[in-house]
Length: 458
Image 1 (cartoon, rainbow, N blue to C red):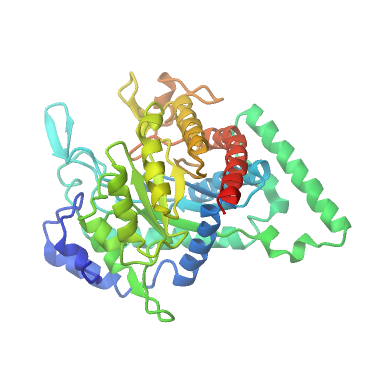
Image 2 (image 1 turned 60 degrees about the vertical axis):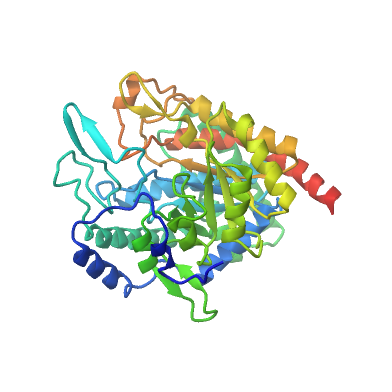
């Protein structure tokens, strides 16, 4: 394999990159970004990888969630807080119900760029370039807004830095304290889910009181007062990712400091493509989206390119097929990976394969299909003797109406009430929490089954 360097990706075919009209301006922006402070640090990335290695062994579960595409317009501390709240709530349900630690990773503080199925968008007789994410162009349907503007990367960096600052304050400064779980409640969560969540709250409070009575002071136990919360996004905009990649002074290794975890999309995972070439040289944990067109031999090749040492925690395979296609495609991929003895996390993205167009013309995702894909994925893993170790969802802490169904019974007609996404439909906090409750038993079953398989194999 050819030697990797920071810009070796430029010698490979690159899909879904914006075409900037002013190359000099782009170079100026990237040159300045290279001198900006890192957004995350190598030590944090190593810590995440260590936690993800526990997931590989079936001793933890990966929860990855957040915005489809972050926007400049919706940038607000309340929105960041509410998304964090929703992920903490989901995590609490999964930790308590499945009796295992949950590794928490947000699609946040950098999830701006989006690959699009078509380079153009039509409205009536008018055709314009597609919206590619707020760090590239504007959502407004005007010729001026749709021209890629390199200076938007400055604003994206600034927003990511501010978001990270707030997340660190919340996760380390008392907001995530287990004694404060009642503060994580979101007002609009439906009554049935609220009651179930309240039961867990009460049990945790009783357990903490018992510990205190036994002389164990929760006040001095850092694990009860703080959480490790990591960030992730798709490594799509390679010029930006290169500008944020730094050499760790303690090891000499390259880390992409734009996020702790980055993934390669289903549209950009070509083994001889620029995105794979870039990701093989950085030390971050890497996700690979696995769709229906991915063949087992290609997936094995990708894993070997990106993780030649077969390091546990390095690779997360994120399956995304659609509820009715899981049994057709996933078993072959699992068999191929198992046969090669590759150490990977299997995570389920039940969102992307279940996108449909509602009668109103808006894109949506039926909650029942989302849930069914998760259940089908767990069933396949159990049948194949592997561990379904992660959930990857597009969700928000806001009370949006973008995905139909769930306990709130959102209909096609309800979608227009609060449809705010800049790209794909997201679960709202109520639906996300409901999903956590519904799959917690599946995780418990799958975990026990997989641990027995691992024990027998060793």
